[in-house]
Amino acid sequence: MSTAIQNPPPPLTKKDFATDQEVRWCPGCGDYAILNAVQTVFPNLGIPREKFVIVSGIGCSSRFPYYMNTFGFHTIHGRAPAVATGVKLTNPELSVWVVTGDGDGLSIGGNHLIHAMRRNVDLKVLLFNNRIYGLTKGQASPTSELGKKTKSSPFGTAEQPFNPLSVALGAGARFVARSVDIFAPHLRSVLEAAAKHRGSAFIEIFQNCNIFNDHAFDPWTEKAVRDDRVVTLEHGKPLIFGKERNLGIRVTDFRPEVVRFEGEPPKDLLVWDETRTDTTLAHMIAQMGDRADMPMPVGILRNVQEETFESRVHAQLRDAVARQGPGDIAKLIRAGEIWDVK
Image (cartoon, rainbow, N blue to C red; front, side, top):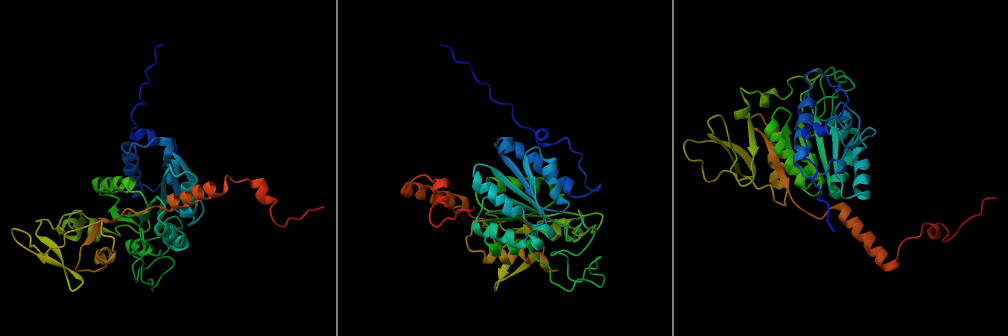
């Protein structure tokens, strides 16, 4: 008896993840670059297309599900992490990605975001940070700089902004990273690393809003200055940067400082370890970019594996079934006190 040989399906390509929907962001928006990066990375992850789910809230970034040829939910303002948690709990085999913005994710959705990270739900959260409310036309967001004049703060904001990396680290996210919309190879590498991580993953992506907050990240990302203003975190390597690769980061008295050197780098430069379970050093590095005398860190700040929320929940369910047998919804409804409604 002959057995028919099953030919493997053709490999997925970037085109397989593009929809027939017109991409409707403003010309020049950084969201295009992020969409391109995601559509480039997904085919290489070895995951069937039907296993991907994109969940978004409200905002410019939240149009993402329409442009990805995967399953998706366009939910309500700030609630994407809650919906995504339900998706992951229901079917842990799915690769669930949350797309949100600095307003959607850190303002009305801040509570949902921090608890998804705290629980270690296996979600990949992409937070597009443009330091402004773009969809509603230019109000100050939780990441807008102190003193920034916007439509909602005509005299300048009077509040300190969130540092998204510090928020994620403080909430206990096991994977925390930062990249930039125009740093294409770097962004793709961070997305790939997040996809391989099992557990809560948070990626802040600097995203330029060229209509309401253009050039927000130029002091770090412009080609003329980026080599001297950005330091890339690479696991197991010392923190070295600069056009001449002659600048490094050293920690003295619990405070990072820039060291200039010639020739061989000093032995006391900070060697990056993304697998540290303690977050003290990661917090310190996350806040470097808030100082005018320090470079902006990009890369993976934390990458720690722990048991996920959904694996614990399903273990509890299996234990309950083993002890009490399969559930009977009809029996449960009729258990205890009941009332007959005439």
